[in-house]
Length: 416
Ligand SMILES: [Zn+2]
Image (cartoon, rainbow, N blue to C red; front, top):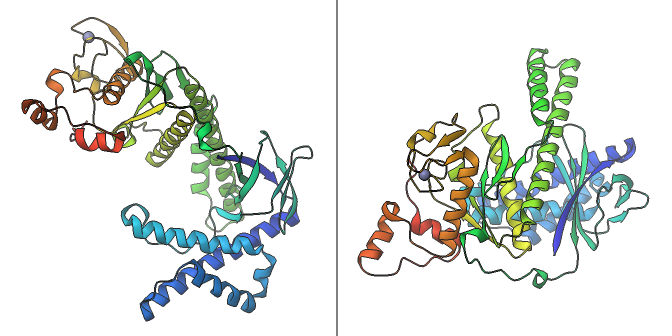
């Protein structure tokens, strides 16, 4: 199985200059390849593939000898990535869009598909044509390095994402366990303030220092907007802001890795979450939409991977479901709870006291179990599809996997 590790690199000045030039060469080759493919299509109606563009690379190397300074496999990877960008676009144009030219500035990456070596003792990562770079191996790995992606961040930080094949087959993943009752399902309510609230009563916070860093970021961003354009002070300030952004993103990732590992380590046979397009309605006004979306989708993918690796059933509730408004004890739907400020409430029917997130997580666990066990919804909550099926005396349409469950049971989301 292939696993990814991310480490901080500390290249010396010369190595950093080499990496920057390598990133520039990779970008150049990618853009040339893209232009070549566009022209070939426009002029001759030809669709180029990876191998066609490889021939171009040889020509480029003759014309631009400085390309030889960069590891040739990194340049080939640029063309492979370009090819996947086209494949993605052809298969799923709505999601991926037509490949873009890469611009200077921003985040730059160079991939090394072979010949990188790690020395944990000396804390060094050997990178072809760059040399032995100091690397903080905070975590060791066992197995063979597949690809190393070096990223040069706008903050000036340098990271290596190392893909490692541990040689184990997927069969090592334990078999999925039976889900026999609601108690086997752990429901998770994702949030912005509290990262996750679980139906077993536990909850996971974002990093301890996150809100402090966010306040500082705001202050420094204000400072940046006051600096004169093109001045060296503005440049300095821009770097400062990028550094804080980097720290916040690292803290958020750390918190997510920790929480998802602990949740996947619990004894439940299944884990249920609400899908993002449903969850996305709730926002923290302190945080930009794109940031909270990115953090939540990272949380979901990490949780799903870790749960599946442990043989757990992972369920995404892919339709609108009143997880916050329904009383988890009696099912009464309390419309007043739409107000996000209400953190605690008492059910007017059964008088159970609820914390907002805890109650939601219990409902998510129940809905998750209902979907796994393929049970129809309770009473008044039957959808038109299910109603027709029940009236005709048929079984409720069987659901296999979650994408399908969403299609069968989807209902328009009301405006909150
Ligand atoms: Zn109640």
